[in-house]
Each structure stands twice: as structure tokens, then as C-alpha cells.
Length: 113
Image 1 (cartoon, rainbow, N blue to C red):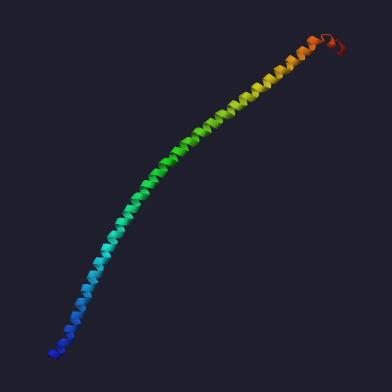
Image 2 (cartoon, rainbow, N blue to C red):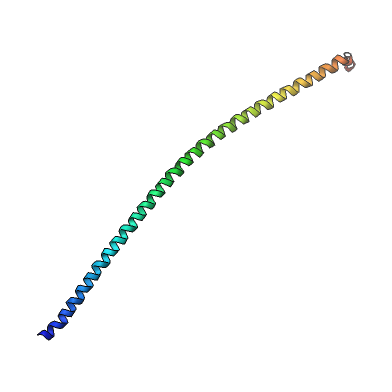
């Protein structure tokens, strides 16, 4: 009977060793998974912080862009007004030049008849 029990005992010991190694492997795997999860959470926190910072910078940039667009519009309007003023000034200078010419030669308009 001892002869028949030896293979059974060997099989049970092998099964026990297999179970112990499997449990140890699972524990190691769980520890690695926890460590990986912690690393992922830390990375996610950093990404969230960076994203918040980038969002803030984007908002600031959009506000600056809006201010630049507003200033550009103001400059364009000012340039249009200035162009109009220069045209009026040019017309006035042409009138002054014509008036001076008439004053220098007041009778030149009579020759047009």
C-alpha cells in the first residue's frame, strides 16, 4: 500500500508546489499591477495639471488675440479717418493753390470767355 501511496503523495506535493508558486506569482502580479496603477494615476495627475495650465494659457492667448484684433480694428478705422483727412487737406491745398493763381493773375479768368 505504501507503494501506491508514493505516487499519490508525489502528485499531491507537486500540486501543492504548483499552487504555492501560482499564489506567489499572483501576489507578485497584483503588486506589479498596483505599482503600475499608481504610476498611471501619477501620470494622469501630471497630465491633468499640464492640461489645466495649457487651457489657462490658451484662454490668455485668446484674450490677447481678441485685444490685438480690437486694436487692429481701431488702427484700421484710424487709418481710414486719416486717409479721409489727407484727402480733404489735399483738396484744400488744391483750392489754395488755385486761389493763389487767381490772385496773381486776376484777369486770367476773363480770357476764358
